[in-house]
Amino acid sequence: GMLQRAAAAAAPKRWWLANSTAPLLAPAYAAHQRSVPRLPIPPLGETLERYLRAAQPLQTLEEHAATRAAVAQFFDTDGPGLQRLLEEADAALPHDSSYLESLWYRLAYLGPRSPVPIHANPCFTLAPPSRHTPPLERAAGLLAKAAQWAHALRTGTLTAPTAKGGSPLCMALLPAVLGTARIPRQGCDVLHSASAPDAAAVCRRGEWYSVPLFDATGAPLPPATLLDSLKQLPPAAAHAPAVGALTAWRRDEWAEARAALSSSPQNESSRKAIDEALLVLSLDDSAPASPTELARASLCGDATARWYDKLQLLVFADGQAAINFEHAPQDGAQVVSLASHLAEAGEHEAGEHEAGGRRAAARAAPPRRLRFDVSPELGAKVEAARACAAAEAAALDLDTATVRSVSAGWAKGRGVSLDGVVQLSFQLAHRRLTGGLSSTYEACSTQSFSHGRTEVIRPVTRESAALLQRLEEGDADAAALRAALDAQRRLVADCQRGHGHERHLLALLVQAEEAGMPTPGLFRDSGWATVTASLVSTSGLRSPALGWFAFGPVARQGVGLGYLLSPDGVALCATSFRGSGAPRAADLAAAVDEACTTLRGAVETLIPAPQPTSKL
Image (cartoon, rainbow, N blue to C red; front, side, top):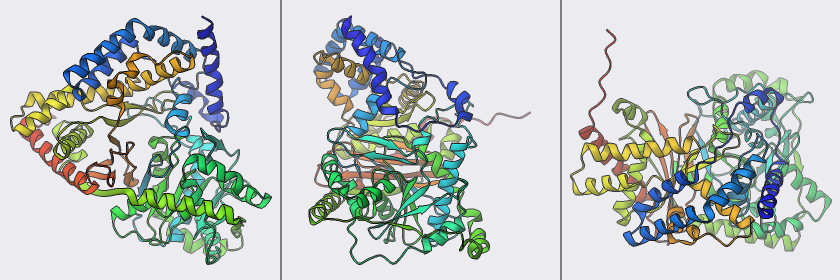
């Protein structure tokens, strides 16, 4: 009893640690936020059933029997008590929170010690504007749009997000998209949000500058004024000590170097100006010549021109642009909200620059140089961090492909889920390349719940395994295809309503740790490691604002598959590590393309197209 009370009392405190620095939403959104339901804790028995279903297709009969026994034992012994502890801890939390949130910050993002580029930070390339835009002009337009978005969110004029059916989506993470920095600490990092961030931290050839984004009244500056500021950036010094590379290092080493970086008042003030900026703008000297080069430069380009602990806008020498973001305070859904606003930039910008250019010149503040004194000792650390980032980037294999055989338009016409077909194609491709099925992760947004973050869909099912077997043997039938697509549809629907299995089990494991109990047998059984290995890590989005979506594998021997579903195809970015034994990125992308063709053929042969209903 005492243990239980102690755990329940600790929960709100943990929640507060993660959230006390988070910027608050504008009062205008209070009613919207209150109407967003809290993340449910599913019944224990349901979660255990779902877990067994996820494990079965990845296991031998013997392994599965052992996992079944471990699950039965958990249900009869530790499980119900841990479920009660979790429910009590959840009941003690405020409405505007979730049972998952604080442990998710720690376990998924702030706790891991590996470098954040490739391993944690995803990137989105932005769809090109309708006309070619020179880099400084593109940067000015994007900065102005980012400032407008932040201003609209602060003043309560940004439209509150809703799901397709009109139900409210949680906004709690939106204020942390801009103005937030991850701060390295030994063992576990922290997040810091500036109270009223009003400038961009701009990096050009390793030198840092602060450029104001708002006028004296707090209104966002127009693109013409920002362009004039950017044009005043001095030609860079020959060899700037590129301190941004430190953010690409292993987290404990960066935490140690940070003390040296803050050794003088000048350094401390420059670092603070970057941490507390609304966002980072990196003016990159390279001009990536292909989609693959663009995705690579956006995911893990030149570390001397990056600051990976914040959301960064990257603008390349030919005007192409991308976002690379620190993942701890937000998920893809929130960054897509910002990117959609940035995408509106291109259309009326040119006129503004031409008309406002001369008038703006008097008002534009020159960029303020952020100076760093770099001692030889700190210089050696910067170089070690740069070399570490370069080695990690060199080990990453990345390739892009545009799949045309399946598309949102085609899927709608056939009455099937495009995401369901694409997920089956990933399994078929992986099976063709490796001879088997592996633990697969598909991210699912749970933004329809207060502070929901994400749930994991485990798309390898008994039904998908049976379909792939039959496809390869050439005797797939309509029942097998429908069963596989239906199984995936049910999984997605369960996860979207907060009834996945994995985040819930993780929370029960954390409850056991916090109560000082030995690790329950369910988590020591080999099934847990098998299901959660995520050798195939996937995430899909839909947004006309984006060109490509890339991230690294989560397992060293694994692969990453970022994809964008569009009306006329699927933009795919595949990643793996060289020498890890995982398939090469180009082979994986080609195999997925081929698997999509196979599945298109199966759908068209086996599932009759829905007849258009007569209007008569």
